[in-house]
Amino acid sequence: MDIVERYIAAVQRELPEQKREDIGRELNANILDKIEALEAQKGAVTDTEVAEVLYEMGSPRSVALQFCPPTPLIATWIMPLYLNTLYVVLGVLFLLSLIGVTSNWLSGTQMSLLLFMKSLASEFLNHAYFAFTAITIGFAVIGRKPKNEEPQTCTWSPEKLPPAGKSWQHISLQSIFSDLATMLFLVMLIWYPLWQSNSGAQSIFTPEVLTILLWFTPVILVAIAHSIWQLRVRLWNRTMLLLNIAVSTAFLLVSLWIMLNTPILRIYSEAWEGAVSIASIERSIFVVVFVVAIIAAYEVIRDTRRLFRI
Amino acid sequence: MGTAPLHKLKLELRRGVLVLAVLASLKEAHYGYSLRQQLQDAGVDIDEGTLYPLIRRLAEQGLLDSEWKQSEGRERRYYQLSTLGAELLEQLTLEWTSLNNAIGPLLLGNNGFSNNDEEHH
Image (spheres, rainbow over the protein chains, first blue to last red):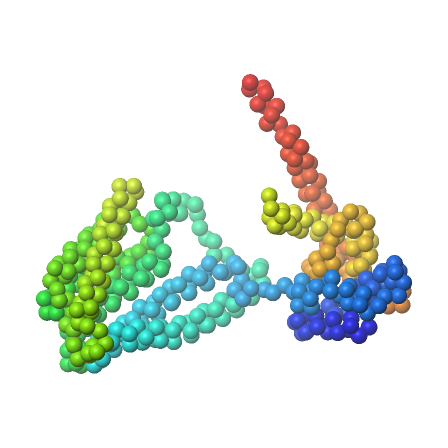
């Protein structure tokens, strides 16, 4: 029967090469049995009735999937480690891209924020594509091991588990990397033009704001060290909360001081000529600093409350 | 309860039981279609899309032996319980009986708690 042959050929096309012949042969026998049973009931069957039998069995792709269910690219037992590796590697790559692009941006003649964002996205994605592909292929290969060869990674003991704590005590990687990226960006923004003054890099801050930011740098370095500590511990404790309250308070005070000492940035009017007014740029920068102050104030209140609950 | 969760739970409940039913039916040799008929006659309705891949998987795991035979003018693949399959069926049957004995009273609501409660009162 031509229609049955065509159906089996369509199923075989969806199957892996080494299983095509065997499954096709068996499927053919099963279909012929079904048709034979129908003939025993009704007498000779028409092509339409055979087509109905095939339709009931399901589309060739769904039948092929029933015989050979797809295996996930990354095996389930290795998925948590895969996701963790991706987060860490992509986070580190983002930080490296940020450092590279910020140094180029600050030493460049054009101070376009849009160009900076575009360069950062492009630099990060260039590295991220490669990292993502390499990590995925690596884990796909590791996951192909037969199940009995799975490494026994569960060398743990209940006694060594961290305290149960509250749900907020767990620090996410995303939060750590976004803090690290912000702090590194700030350090580069403050210090790069001073280190690389002979390359033509100029500070974007007014001298008054730059002076206070230079004095503020140790606090930013403490915040960076704190983030690195969080990477190791991943659980808020009293010392970490106290440190975070101190850092956030310092950020709040500096933000307030900067807001009272406008202008904040040295704006090169010729670069923005015709695009936006200087007043609107200053207003936008003021809003940004205000938002930073609000976030810092929120973190002070949040961490103080947590300190009493821990 | 909606039909979708009920359908999903029924599938989950049937999944393991179907393996037991198939293994038990294959104490005698059967080809795919005849096995399905036998299960249906016994009151176990199983979809072809589930049964045929299932018996292939069980054969790949070494629980069934299979052989192509000529029958009524054409070839059919016959499956039968292997030695390993027979051993496993015996253990699974014990497990099934034990579960059935434990769950039966629970489903009937006669789990002993009510008697204890009455004693406390």
